[in-house]
Amino acid sequence: MISIIGGGPVGSYLASLLAPKRQVAVFEEHDAVGLPVQCTGITTQALAKVLNIRRQFLVNKVTASKIFAPNGKHIHVKLKNPNFIIDRTKFDRYVAEKAQEKGVKYYLGHKYKNCTRKNGKFELHFQDKHKPFQTDILVGADGPFSPVAKTTGLWKNRKMAVGVQARMSVDADPQTVEFYVGKGYFAWVVPESDKVGRVGTISYAKPNDVFKSFLKRRRLERCKIREYQSGVVPLHDPKIKTQGKNVYLVGDAATQVKATTFGGIVQGMMAAEELSKAILHNRNYEKLWKKRIGRDLRVGLMMRKKMDKFTDKKYNKLVNLFTQERVRKVLEKRDRDYPTKLMLELLVKEPRILGLLF
Ligand SMILES: Cc1cc2nc3c(=O)[nH]c(=O)nc-3n(C[C@H](O)[C@H](O)[C@H](O)COP(=O)(O)OP(=O)(O)OC[C@H]3O[C@@H](n4cnc5c(N)ncnc54)[C@H](O)[C@@H]3O)c2cc1C
View 1 (cartoon, protein in one colour):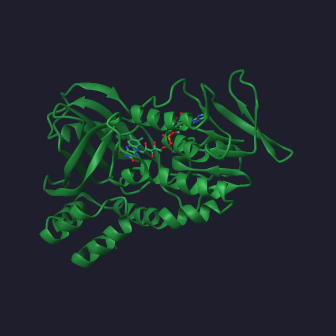
View 2: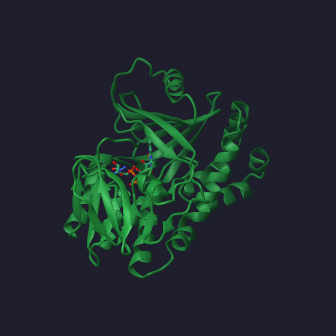
View 3: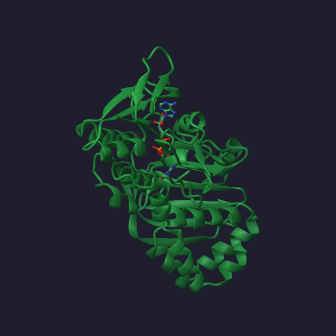
């Protein structure tokens, strides 16, 4: 028996990969999969490499991005590969349904508390009066604060960023995603349509103040807020242990998140593919996922650490360098999910970027 704690996209995807061959149970603390939404739901085409993109969860596709400097100047990038905007509730439910079709049993309203080891097995304990559950393998796909990591000796202090996001009435181009960079934060307007957008900021400190001042910067402070969808994202930490004896961490629980943009859907799902191989074929999970996404996550982290020290002036210079045709062309061609290739090509086209970073 394999027990996965967390019915987010990563836990459910892993369950669907394991289920044809093994008995799998997913335990989710909420009474329904996919709620509350704490995500913007924008991904590159890399998502299509993991699973088929379905109309039932696709909200919009964007074909261009604008990246704004603090001084208001921007780069306009036509995306060779459009980005997907997904409905996270419908997406999470779609992935969970696929797992259920393969025989995975879902235990909703089950909040994992801790576990004890008995005769080589785990006994899982839940809040409320749920019965303990016996399992051979335990997986924490339980998000940034991973209770599985905390109760199995895999927790190590992590740095978290706070995303404040609202679904709002906006006047936006439905084909274009807007990104804003500035000292200490990163912000976005992701269009669902020409009338509704997902507007958010991410920062380490004073998240609500950062969000409010971004609404002013984008002149959205009077627009109607339909729903808040805020949440926490872990900064990738390559030193975190993601496996112990018959216990594994995956997705946000393993900090498998891009530190550049704080997106983690695709990276978590790719790591889930590696974990399924490790469990089914008795291979080393940590080696497998690091081989597949480790370098890109580390390069992203290195870029984030540099950008965290940027002043507004430095961001203005960076955006200015990117307005050059030869540099912009690289952004048009390369997905931000693969920052190693992106960075190398950018540095070849414009070595002054290296000077700004170091
Ligand atoms: C504001 C914001 C915007 C974001 N935007 C994007 C984006 O545009 N694109 C992108 O790729 N990524 C984005 N992310 C990151 C993305 O949401 C995560 O990387 C992704 O959800 C990770 O999936 P997961 O399955 O690992 O974790 P989660 O989606 O967090 O799922 C974990 C699940 O575990 C459950 N759980 C937790 N504790 C317990 C427990 N004790 N017992 C049982 N169940 C438990 C939770 O209820 C949850 O369902 C964003 C994050 C935030 C906060």
